[in-house]
Length: 224
Length: 224
DNA sequence: GAGCGATGTTACCCCTTTGTTACCTTTTGC
DNA sequence: GCAAAAGGTAACAAAGGGGTAACATCGCTC
View 1: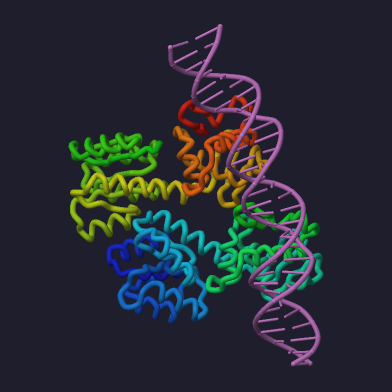
View 2: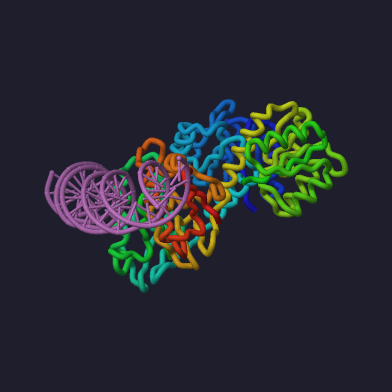
């Protein structure tokens, strides 16, 4: 049973969200201002947070940043009033995972929440297998035909992100955000470079990669 | 072409809504009581539903709940008589996506409908099918009879735009704006050229295209 | 503080993509 | 039936995306 925390000050909206997610079988907690919401999150955690930006006492950005700074990594979906680019970017910078602009469809929101929880669960998987390789997340080791391949920490993070999102087209920006962290700015070419070295270690023929495919003008896609 | 179902018992209002949405280019069906409306929705579906709450035979809440229980996820916008908090909450609880309180501006309602349809389509459609081809938007891949067709990024963008707007006549100008971006200036012949190469990849007989039809003096139309 | 490994940046090169031009075919208007 | 315009498409040219080697920098260990 997943626990969802809703931080939203509009009573009608809060109520509607709460009821809908309870109907979907989730355990739901709700807070009506930033302070209460942040306290709850830091105190008892949650599996996912729905976070309004405009909130009394502490705004959504601040909450998001604080939660991340304290080391929590649950998915955070921001509820923004308008599709204002700058709001969205700022939210993502602060560590939010997704945003939904009001008015939004409750079905759409539920679908996104499900997707995040599914993926986050996948993020708990202990071992991934692909080709003749294994990634063991307990020991942070990668094996190929039973022999260990030495990966640097960035290579490991990149491979892990690829495996969690295998089959999906991933932009360099999203790779950067998830592997390098949204606060750190690196060139997109750094991603390329890291991909090259990773290919050199896990691909049989790095020049004709079987797993890490390039999608021109987009980024990369990992195929198991 | 989107199909909108209007369930509203006030004849004048129903008529007004119907005319307005037809003018906007939608296909519109209307029902005057809850039973007829629900039957229609479950029987033939719709892309979006405008739903009055106070209705003869079956009320709006009940309709909404039944539609969701049957697994339909089209956007439902409730038309509530007053901005009564409790009505709104109840509507959202039952799975409505948005509500508009009477009296409302028709422009505002049309805008919301458009926003919902756009987002619903974009957010929900992960896969498009046409002929014996599939476009998978998660992986940015196109398949034909299960085999991958390699599309360049422009071809992919063009095909995606065609699919989102299938059945509509699209001018070269609008194709350019959406696929190339409004900032970049290219010759209209570039669109033609891209269409040709795309036809070569997805059409069985590129010289007698089944999907990408030319409309002389206008542009192109995609037929699924 | 020297040495070393990891990682970011830059630069260079290759190759695909893509815009343009030109020529040909088809359609349209007279 | 002919001229003019629209669209198909082959050919060429130019741009630029991405692989990757080389270099710079940072942080750690001894």
